Length: 159
Image (cartoon, rainbow, N blue to C red; front, side):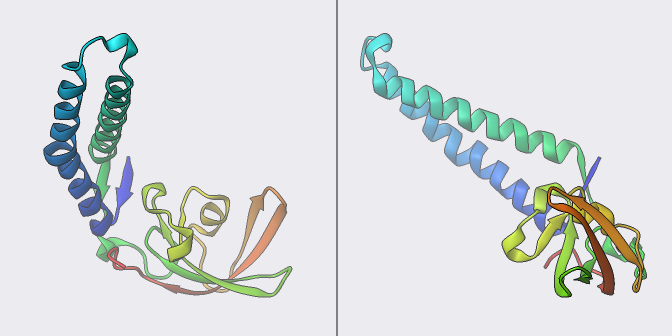
């Protein structure tokens, strides 16, 4: 079971509806046109239309599976004093004395440019459950990072 913010759940639902109601009918139409052009074995347009159809069906199935196995998390029931899903965490890398701030999100919401890291990433997993002032140790490819939690802000799930 995966937990998603309301915003991400709505984004996935919207993309799925768009794929089913807009993209897939167009892909089917393009495939029919390419198929009507004759010999399929020597028809690049037909092969391309089949490739796009397969890619679209794959994406639809993936999004359906994500929604089937996900629940929208209610941020009001999350602990406020420790790092959890949707927490905004500021921490210091003790070896470089660098401060960083990230929001802990599900893998389907991860976006480093937006400051969102997965709770399943090495850093996200190490921070989970920690309180302000505690040290988390994250095993990353370059070694072990020691991270001191500076602040925790509960997330609303729509940022």
